[in-house]
Length: 141
Image 1 (cartoon, rainbow, N blue to C red):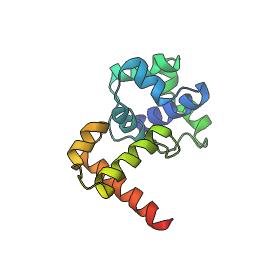
Image 2 (image 1 turned 45 degrees about the vertical axis):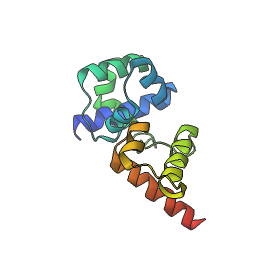
Image 3 (image 1 turned 90 degrees about the vertical axis):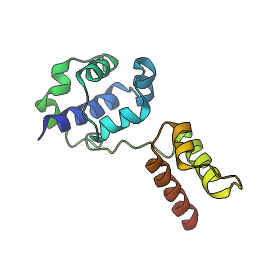
Image 4 (image 1 turned 180 degrees about the horizontal axis):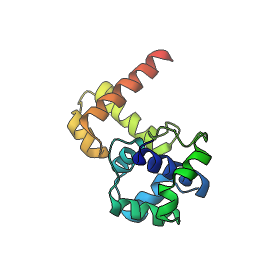
């Protein structure tokens, strides 16, 4: 297994074990939420500087984060391979999705994908994806 996948999985496992949320890390170390999610999904490699911040937030050593043995012991944990997308039960995410739906579907004065992306610090494509997800959910209700 690639080291980046081991690191990513170990961070997720440690976050769960230590009860450290993404919000705890991004607030303390001024990392953007979207960047943190990209790191945890594996879309973006974690720099040593950010890895050091995450290590400090989790109060663990580099060797534990990089440990293939730790990964092998915990790889069957549901947190090891958990996708890190915002949880729809999360109040912030719910409000964001509701706002995007309102401004893109319901409102007479529609906002652009770029305007909403800037408002929530996400890409235009992610705004479009959220809009599609919410519309599908509404259609299935």
